[in-house]
Length: 114
Length: 115
Image (tube, rainbow over all chains, first blue to last red; front, side, top):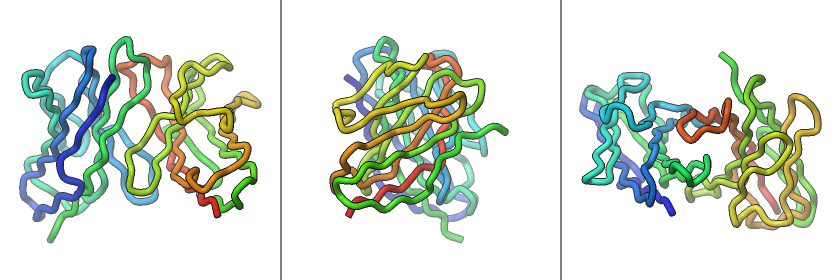
């Protein structure tokens, strides 16, 4: 079985501040981890994914995430928030030998203050 | 850039009615998926589909649900007799080969409201 927990359903940062969105996973098999972003009235768009190569993964729009097996975490960061980063962010896990279904966390809505 | 499209964007229906949600996956993709998100809850997997057959399905995907690829481009989700609890945003997704490391590309969703 696999699951994902995203701490903080809402996160608010000031423009230019560090963005940190937390994701912890539980998986009985080596996990593959994904971050998706959803802008208003749009579908889920892939930001980045971890597929067992480098543990530090760089994605689009300046985001990156680090896979830490010891902490079962895959937190998403961006050094400097931009107003256009305001959106909902979803962490998801897909487990090898567990099929190709994505299991999502509850989502974190990021608000960016001017 | 190719994208997954879904129609309609919104649908309102009466309890007990049948609804069909439509999706056009990315043209060279072979695996198709439906997910749903009830308001305030997580995005949940419903079903995956490959080679005109269901590949996997979740417990949610009971006999009231069915999927079909009626032609070379559309992928549909049918709910035979809608219940109030079927009200949700339904997302279609597609991927090239269905590998666990592949990106699943999502459509914008259909918001279904059952009254």
